[in-house]
Image 1 (cartoon, rainbow, N blue to C red):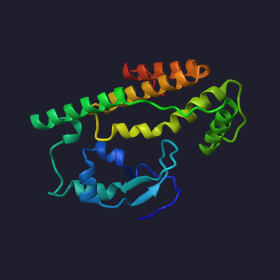
Image 2 (image 1 turned 120 degrees about the vertical axis):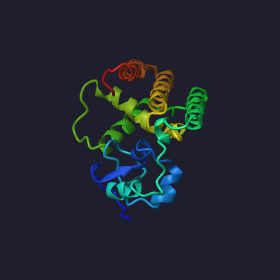
Image 3 (image 1 turned 45 degrees about the vertical axis):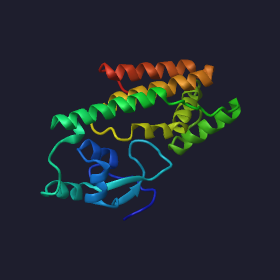
Length: 205
């Protein structure tokens, strides 16, 4: 297994989330693939934790074997029992997201600005702070600081309610940030509206 802060090629490797979208469950990944081939950086967004990545060729080879389950559990199709279980899980996750208290870190203004700039630099932006950009940077930093709440999405695979749950979670996080930092409420509201726009075919943030 290769380790390190490498940027990976999505045509060569697939992430755990990508496997879920193909119909894999966590148990199937553990039992049929074992350890990841690479621990690297996500090609889509920065994360402090390494991302588990699996060679697409190895994944496809396993999918062609008789041992690979053919029932498309991740998409919500298949037997009635599978559909009922998926719907129960979807309802449970949505309920957990609605009920979970969102605790936003409270920071003095200068400290929040410093951390927001540092987060932006970690993402590779080496330019200066443009007028009006700092507010957006602060919201982005706080969303990153709240990324632990993404664990609430565990267990939702493919299209079985996951997109709906992701939108609900982002909406709740933006609402919590706006409540904790009223000066950021306008930016949070704009981002939340873009989340709703994505649901109706608009541009996703």
